[in-house]
Image 1 (cartoon, one colour):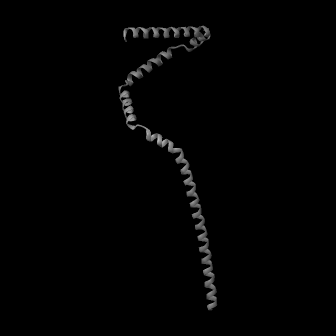
Image 2 (cartoon, one colour):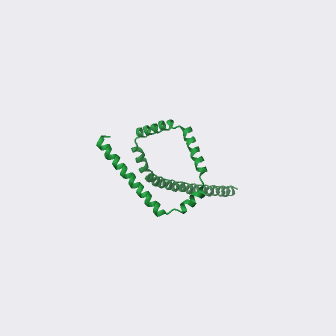
Image 3 (cartoon, helix red, strand yellow):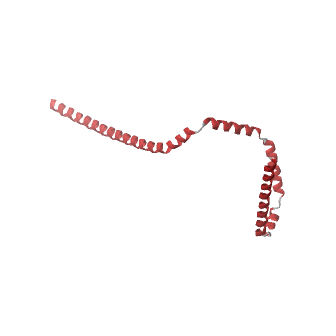
Length: 144
């Protein structure tokens, strides 16, 4: 009976050993996969860091006090804007545009000689530039 007991104990120990060996192999494979995943994440983070580093350097060079001052000035300017007046002006513009006869404008534009119109606008621009030069010359003479 002791031999049967011995054989039975050996079979049980072999099964336990096979189970333990299987668990060790699975644990080793999982550990290896975790290490590979960690290495992959490390390489990806290095690539991201290479892309982000110049941006971080530029952000570090920004003069925060100057940005804050500019934002404060912008806020002050926006506080002085009369939104009710702006809305009223927009409503007037919409009303004026609603009154326009688009078809009449299109037919008038179709009948225009665009070459003549372009020349007239060019002459007008030249005249405006001449007047600005004369104004600058007069201003220089009178010390303005």
